[in-house]
Image 1 (spheres, helix red, strand yellow):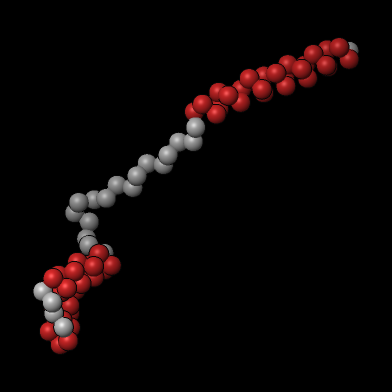
Image 2 (image 1 turned 90 degrees about the vertical axis):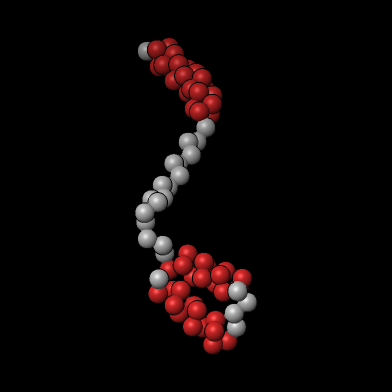
Length: 75
């Protein structure tokens, strides 16, 4: 009885040791990149970046910049 138990335990340990490299070879899968829809509405943060960059290119300051940003952010 003890011999069978020892043999079963030895088989379990051996199979566990041989299975580890098989799992390590696969590696961890990378999650898929989130898909961005081309027709998705522009977020407020993206709109702010775009308007800010345009205002900077035009060198707008003060009231002119404030008016431009207001109109740009409205759409």
